[in-house]
Image (cartoon, rainbow, N blue to C red):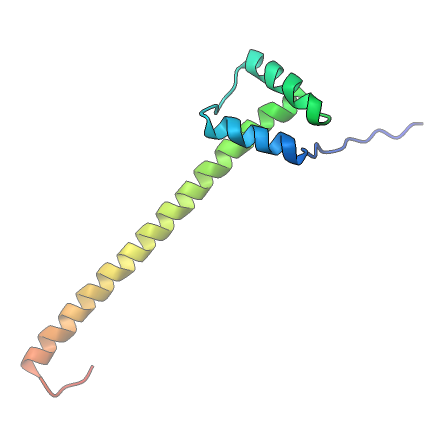
Length: 104
């Protein structure tokens, strides 16, 4: 019995460059006709199917959102710690006012 196997799509560097340019140009969720046109264009640079284009845009958009969420989380985390440090510093200065020789 012949062995059935599936291989993952490995985009060429040209295909990736073109897809990334399209994404930066504003294409986020291409419709069926756009997917067909993009697939036809990218097929000049290597093997590709419509589902590859569809999933590439879907995954790229999800990863961009994930990066943005991580960045915002890091920013808020850093901001929170800076605010707490400033509050603690204010507390130390207050105590030094009452106890100038006391080191905390």
